[in-house]
Length: 322
Image 1 (cartoon, rainbow, N blue to C red):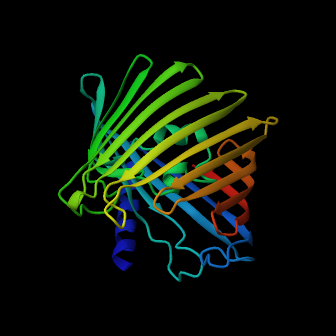
Image 2 (cartoon, rainbow, N blue to C red):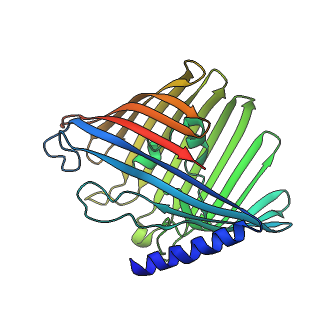
């Protein structure tokens, strides 16, 4: 912990000294006050009447153009350890990469720890990461960042994001295989986007992972909506050496009610063929924009799994950035 705090102190000193010359420092924070109204008796993570204030994410980001064709980004992340965990929030490196602008034709090259394409497009259309992760992120199918090399670019209405990385997120490599990502999105109209996504993670002992996803999103002044469908295959993951398939669909939307308020909602259903079960997630709430970058969002979250009582939470989510 002392080493981490010393590291953070040094980095902050460097960041703010650099800020006086060039570059930009940004921050983003969101969390909740939550109350668990109901939960399954076997659910030790959510017990009835449990309530707390929590920070679910804190970001501190520094980015700068270091040359005409090169830029850097460094981001620290921290979050609440969880109810009764007894641990303080400790930061870790979320992003750390070099961007080579138009390093290959009109495409940018990213080297280091950068964002993956797994749910990047869908998360922008959803617009409420502060309330809940997208369906793949919620079900721990992939990571938001990986250490490797990426290529991002666009040609007309077509955009692409290709990447190869360790496949371990912010953690160190743990085998000889690599993970390959690919996203191809098409701006069918000014407000309509279509995306196809796939990844392949080569794991030891043939325990490879394959993901396919399709997404349709709409964003306009009168609201937004999205539909995401995916299938994930974990090879040889079953007790008898069978493949384990996880498949799901997520539908969401938001609608302006007046100048300061929006309503939003989401419904997910995810099936696990190994357990022959399905998980349901329902979210609904209001978004009050107290200022341009300050939002208060009362919301209700309901999780339900086959054979278990539903987890019902009421939350007041807060979000702000600077």
